[in-house]
Each structure stands twice: as structure tokens, then as C-alpha cells.
Length: 388
Image: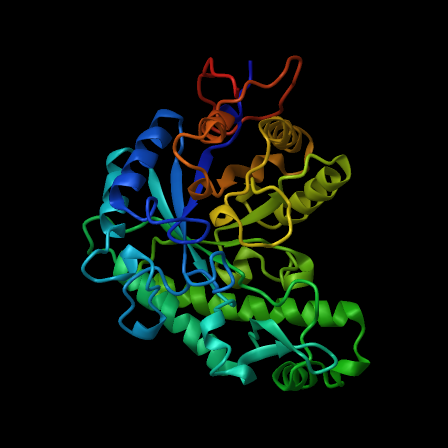
């Protein structure tokens, strides 16, 4: 009998400080209960999304979810951890380590909405000159600002001299906008300097290549700066996609210093999407020795404010996604590079909701027989636990 837990060396539970959260989850005690459950179900890593982008629901909760000293005006006024007197993340990290669980922070990069009004010149623009909801990595001031915040966070929570430094970070929205290309003056200038032609003359493949080169260079700056603080810090990239500036051959570890990438699959049990997901995983696994599969368990609905954003996929859909994950592990090229599986966002699920138990049981889901799996990374004895 095979379980999801036995197939992946890292089983990652993703939560958040304030995104899709509420006052009841923004406490040390809530996170300690979460870690108690995580330890019982074989979770190896807990992560929090920290520093949401300002468009997250509800709209009046925004900012950095830690007590920044460099950017005090960016502190999230609705997050306890963002206030010096009620900061609890160091205690969460310590409690995680006491339970044999590593702690990673998921840090927002290019999407900080509170900057937009004061710095419209930092935003991407589409080909018609319309401002887009994304900071442009071609703007030197953007890179300097984001790097300074990332450095401050790592100094605060990952410095080696700390009693319990966190184990890793991964960058979220570290990219260009997803569905419209940037044509701002900074991008046009950068492209012209690199290729010797105007951006308007470029082919789509040249523009994609350029975006990946810019992201790779900035990523290398980030990893170098963070490892100057903690040489052993693990650093990854989440929500990767070639169209966003993440061509695998260009952002490969040798060029960027990244340890792993995190490939996202939305909660839609659809065979066509699965085939596309598997192909994407294979493209990244060809260049990265560690690839994590992320299952975003929010139900695909319009982006609206409703019930604190507590949308969740159905349990049958979760079962299907686990079988998808096992198929990828069995059939994908470079399957030995698929080392992790994660679920986002458990903060959106009330503690007494059956979906909370279900997502924990996903780690121990028993695959139907026959289900032959190839080489297994760090196999563990299967648990007699069903998902329902």
C-alpha cells in the first residue's frame, strides 16, 4: 500500500498571517495547535505567507506581517505579529522545531499595493500605457526597496546567532504580471540595451527571454544578499511559469542560487489541466534537483470578498488531486527531483470544519491498488488513514 506521505520527503503545510485569515488565527496559540496536528500527520515543514499584497480579502487588512523597523508605515495594522508588543513568530518557529518541523516563510516580492499611490512610476504598464497592478522589476528603486525588506526580514528571523532561526524562505509573486507584458519606459530601455532593438520590434520569444533574464539577475542579487546573513538558508521560488519570467533554463540554480521551485496546481480535478501541470513539472525538474508540488485548495471562484475568503475545494476534489500527485510522481521525467508536496491555505479553514481534518489526511491518503510507483524518496511506513 502506498501513501502520499511515503512518496514525498517534504510535506509542507501552508498557512498565512493575515491573508484569508482572521483574529482567531492570528495568535501563537492557534499556530501551536496547528503544529500539534501537523506533527501527528507527518508534516515536515510549516510555512506562512507573510506580507500580503493589499488586494487580499478583506481589503482593510494589508501590509507587512512583522514589525518592520525600516518600513514602519508598511506594518499591517490588523496583524498581531506586526506589532512589537505582540510579535509571536519567533515562538512559532521555536515550537515548530520542538516538534521536529522546519519553518519556512513565504515572502511577497513584486506585489505591494500600498506602494502604488506614491510610486506610480514603479508600476508596469501595458502596451497602451495603462498602469498594471504589479511592481516592475526593471525599475532600480523597486529592486532596492524589495531587497531591503527581504534582508530585514531574514536578519530578524534567520540570523544564525538566533536561538531558533527559520530554515528557509520562498519568494511569491517574484515575477512580471501574469497575463499582460510590461511596456513601461524602464522595460523598454532595458530591452534596448540588452538586444539592441526596440521592444516593439521584438518577437514574443525574445520578450519572454528578456523577462526571465531580468528575474534571474534580481533573484541572484536576492539569494546572495540573504546568504550573506545566513549561508545555510534555503531559498526557493513559488508560482513559477515561463510567461511570468521563469524560463527554467534561465532561472536554473547555477544562475540564481535557488534551491527549489514550487509549481502550483489549482483545485480543479481536470485531466487537461493535469496534463499541462505534469508537463510544467517536467520542464522545471529538468533543471532543479528539488521541485515541490503545490495544491492550492481554494475553490476557483470569482475574486470577491465573502466569508473572510474561506473558499475551499471539495473533499472528492482533494482525493483526485492526491491521485494526480501520485501519477506525476510515478510518470514524470526526473521524478526523483519531485521532493515535496504542499497544501495552501489552511488558515482559511475553521478548526472545527471537516476539511481541516481532510487536508491533514491528504498526507496519508492511501492510493488505490494497483498503483505501481517508481523510486520513492525516503519511504516511510504507510499509515492506516483514509482521507474521509
